[in-house]
Image (cartoon, rainbow, N blue to C red):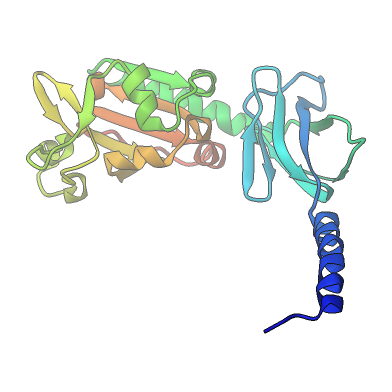
Length: 254
């Protein structure tokens, strides 16, 4: 089948135009940077979370954050930090967009809740007959690890490895059938008194599988406690600590 020369010429002329239209409709993307500060003092806030839709970043030690690839147009940045009120900031991303400054107002009620929780953690650690290592938010934010399992392996002073099917968890040994969910036969195992055993893990005061630690980044954790060189691991998320200042803590069992 032969194509008419006139049709071919028209098709060739249309292709550049279609390509130009596609380029015109493709959104331009730019880097977006900024800083999060205390509205009362102007002090940069380390570890504040800045949210852009489904994307989150955490501010560094100078309070700064950066999204490397944001489409031009109207957006809303959301920011929050422990002990501060949340903030939504609408803005327009374009060629002349300056670095963003987000000021968060201190919330006395939230700050008091955090203080109460920190005091309870300390009191509880002092009451147990085991060595306890506690890692606070500052240490967690500066660690650089991808998830909490990696953090504990490299910073928790533990010898760790993946569990095999024949290893029992410490909580199964301690509680018998009371917490069978711990006998997962997988996840993280630590060397305790010459034996590889799955530690007893609690996340926000609930029993958890050890492999759940992989679901949390250090930036999401307020504090993690390691009891008896890995016999027990207790992790507390930012959200739970902030909301739990007026709740009673559950007792620790050994």
